[in-house]
Image 1 (cartoon, rainbow, N blue to C red):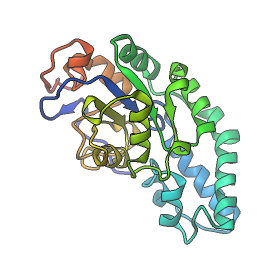
Image 2: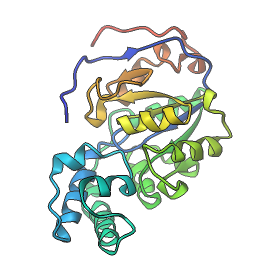
Image 3: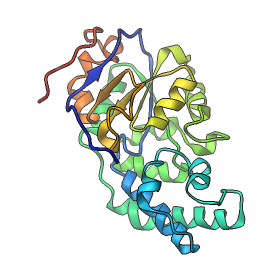
Image 4: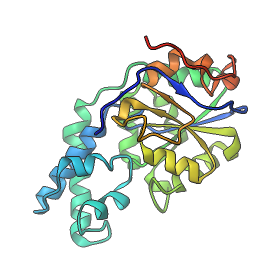
Length: 248
């Protein structure tokens, strides 16, 4: 992954009123991107397919339907591809999830957004049965009933299917929503659906990789601290004019 740079928040443009936040989980609320990559690498290896960690890591944020053919000759529909997918799911659930940690203030950010009247809906490429433990780790179980996953979409990110499903779950228009994610695939999916995107560096991507986001923050702790100067300020009751705070 490219090195993180330019600490602190960067913002672009004046934003309209926001009623809905579509929220990614992996790399956004939970520090899980490396774990996902290693689970894939080991799952491929179990079927005799040698895939470099770095090649997989660059694609974390996509669902398995998108990732698998990009790093191997397999598809999720093939017999071997199905075995790899099942092995990845087993490894992630039993070996990696117990070791995962939330990013600082992940749960507090979710609680604050909801307290300020925003509708918050999960829009994740994760499998549905992985979302529950991930949201528990993030101290964001309040979102369990308002979550969309790869199970709710024909294609995962960077396809906009999950974003459309999340908007339907929230009964919201694209113009009223902002996505929060950590990968270029979150930005691509949101943009394709007509939704603006705030990006976090916490997933390991550089500001250049996250070009297209309307604002970039270090992670949940940074957005929480700067919420009233963020593109969510109009909804959050703060100053709606974006600004660039000095790095802490």
